[in-house]
Image 1: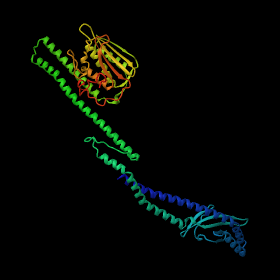
Image 2 (image 1 turned 30 degrees about the vertical axis):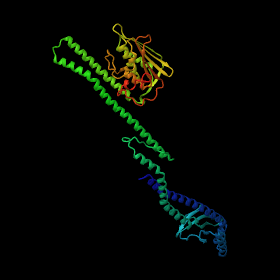
Image 3 (image 1 turned 45 degrees about the vertical axis):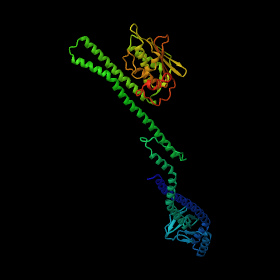
Image 4 (image 1 turned 90 degrees about the vertical axis):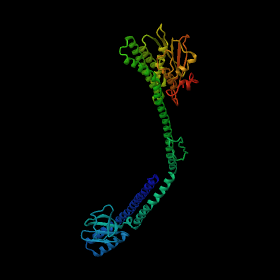
Length: 487
């Protein structure tokens, strides 16, 4: 059922009920006012004729017929337009308009009451009449004008008005509702023609002045915008999943083939000499560790591509750096790692990603900041610089040539002596871009080794619109602007 039909039916049922209720209330008020006037008149007439009624009872009790007739005529003359009935111990005198004597009356009516007889209504009032030697009751009657034909006519007209109001008000309400719902029907037709799956067309709505319609249009536009955003994120997630599978199959092929070759050697040569067997097993363990590291790095790269704004919060960077340094010391007990972090430096970011950034910078420094003669020496510093927080990681290794300081952040870019996955610095670049920061590589503070410097805004910001670090490559897509803006 359409809304306009519902409104028409509701109004068509409600209006006659309201008319009937209003008419009933009006009749009750008019009837009460008429009764009040009649009752006041009865009381005045009763007070005026009480002396004559008492004189009449005395004349009747003294057996004086002539005096009684005179008193009776005087009583009826004083009553004027009301009927009177004097009930004595032995006789009853009555005159004027009143109910038939056969109509039963209440025992007493100190306040006016209604008496009905033969289709007529009367207002009746009883007043006790008492003298020294005689007593009785005086009844005063007046026809009930509140129950006359005029009020019956008003009742019929109220009912007639209610019956006419039902269809008329229903049709009028239906017409008004249909006209008011026209913008809603237009909006419905526009929205029905939209299919976000097959078309980029979106809802265009001009304000109509109807708050409900405009609010509904705004809600539809918001829902479609959210659908578009979610569709983009879903597409990115699918691209990331495909890229994960492609990268994993490509990068895992070589170590898996190497592991397969070593397993074939062990299977085909059960009598392999111990030194050769040890070498094959060592190679297997190395390839196995490389596989595990590669899968972990690919997983973290995918997580960074799919992180949502709801995951961001305030992160204490010195605390995260202290935890990363403690873990690095545990993994490399022979290395010398120092930390200089000013307390209270926070950024708005993704805590797992920032920890990943610190872990990979330290892992890179430990891997390349040592030589055969001495253990690695790494210095980590966290300091504030205006609206930014600066993280520096210095090592004592051979450093990074200027021509390679952009390419080292590409996926699977490994140095000649590297045994890693080639994704550690890519994760650093990804997390820096995710937090709207920048990362640069330079010579160490005294010209020895390398310094990696990451600058992160304290307030953070909106996440990048598109994140495809697992899909694309830094060198192909980001090399021009990367040293200034890690995106």
